[in-house]
Amino acid sequence: MTALVNLHDMIFDAIERGLSGLLPLLARFVFAAVLLLYFWNSGVTKLGDGLFGFLVPSTGAYAQIFPKAFEAVGYDSSQLGVFHWLVVVAGTWAEFILPLMIVLGLATRLAALGMIGFIAVQSLTDLYGHGGIEHAATLGAWFDRMPDGVILDQRAFWVFLLVVLVVKGAGALSLDRVLSRTVLGRVED
Image 1 (cartoon, helix red, strand yellow):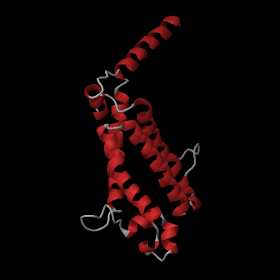
Image 2 (spheres, one colour; image 1 turned 180 degrees about the horizontal axis):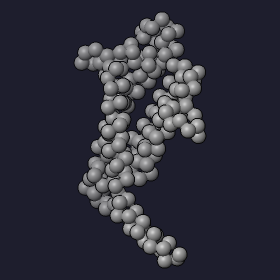
Image 3 (spheres, helix red, strand yellow; image 1 turned 30 degrees about the vertical axis):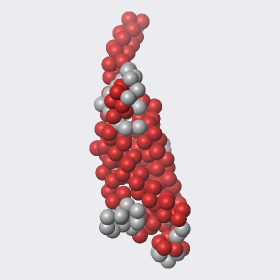
């Protein structure tokens, strides 16, 4: 039995050492394949008209991010304050910039942390701002044999994917690796 355990350990230790850099690369690939366009399309819906649409968000942006506050002012975004504008603009930019940074592998750990925060705020807005908390199917439940809850189930996978990037970094094929080697003269594992 000891020989079998030693063989197992030898094989999987070699796999772990040889492929450890593959995990963050695969995490970034899965993020790009599954979530990149989701976030970018969401960001596009928040852009205002014209060349400066990235500074003058659409009314839909306020409806998405501040649904109750927007309703309270009669759906007139000019009645909302600078705080609301800053949050909407920052959130819109984050939907474009953070996913791009993750896919490129640029400041990946910070971008992944930012996306985790973004997903937390998005989830709370969906639950409390849009009333999702009142719908069991939207909230979902862990350990219930049904893996299709939008918030608890689906977004747990999103966050787990991002936690891998926070812990492991961007991996071998990334701008982080290039910058680390060229600018800082570091050689990573």
